[in-house]
Amino acid sequence: MLRKKLQVMIPGGIHMAVALTLGQISKREDAHVFLMAKGRMVSARESQKVLALGIRKGEWIEVMVDSEGGEEAEVIEQVEKVLGCL
Image 1 (cartoon, helix red, strand yellow):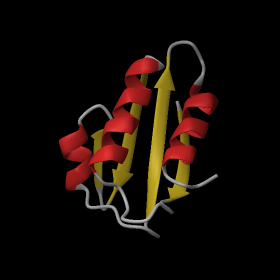
Image 2 (cartoon, one colour):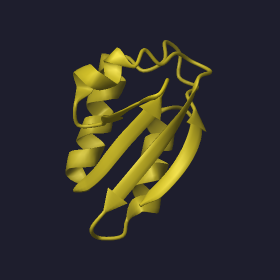
Image 3 (cartoon, helix red, strand yellow):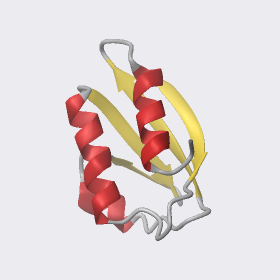
Image 4 (cartoon, helix red, strand yellow):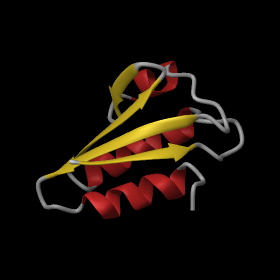
């Protein structure tokens, strides 16, 4: 499992389109992607729960990725792009 703290830099924070994209990454890469913020951890595959975190631009989250194929670093990089971190 790979963990990384990221600062969300996209305007509007994590909104529906972003939440759906995070879920698609998780499913496409067959990886378990979790977001942790404000004392709660949710699966990226559950877009409603991701939205319920209420993450705004500038807030920090922790992303955790577990992949059977060992592609955690690549998945984290995709998440960073979606969140505007790269």
